[in-house]
Image (cartoon, rainbow, N blue to C red; front, side):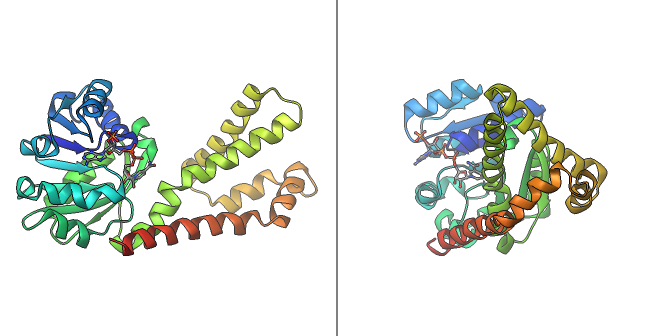
Length: 267
Ligand SMILES: NC(=O)c1ccc[n+]([C@@H]2O[C@H](COP(=O)([O-])OP(=O)(O)OC[C@H]3O[C@@H](n4cnc5c(N)ncnc54)[C@H](OP(=O)(O)O)[C@@H]3O)[C@@H](O)[C@H]2O)c1
């Protein structure tokens, strides 16, 4: 299987790093094309993959084309190479651009799968939502599953759920990182040096995720285990509840989802 990556930026690069690290493919099977010859050459040498002279050249030998440019560039990029795309599978990681719009831009005979990975694919710990369009065959879906399983886990969803997935899974790591920064800052306020504060805060978030993952218990049940009546955790949780933390986080997911819908309706 040969792959083309249109847009060797942060997310395209993260995906390729993960795919190569997993051993599911190798650098010589992946061709990249970015906006300029300079950025293409830089991405190719950084990732150990092949540089193409243009988007059209990148896709010419590919079986699977990853669309990894910014949403605003995506339709123009597909439209410009629609002739070369005929008969190929295009896997889009672009947020908020619907299959219908991708199809119109890519032209007849192109199979499309929309996905929403997160940045942890570079560590092979990503989680990717896959939403196949009706043009995709069961074999295409299996290819997408294999690719994204090699860099973490893959879950099939309906296309209409992608806006919510984008909010919770694409943007969610940034929300959790704000929590991590605040936890660490709280520890610095309490007298820890910044390095120790960051280590303990990171450990706390990693512990929370690992507990949910590995015990299968609900976050609520696990939280109850750590919270003794009138203890330290209860004191801290009280402040979070009173200051509207749960509502604020839900509001963040809602805002990100609404923004994704807004972007979709412009496409
Ligand atoms: N960041 C995330 O966590 C995340 C998660 C899920 C999905 N996504 C999606 O991933 C996509 C890329 O995001 P990103 O954060 O990786 O952006 P990025 O770092 O800016 O990468 C975009 C890449 O597209 C290239 N590009 C621009 N115009 C092009 C053209 N005409 N032809 C070919 N390549 C072109 C850019 O080249 P230059 O380097 O020359 O500018 C750059 O390499 C977005 O659609 C986003 O919605 C991102």
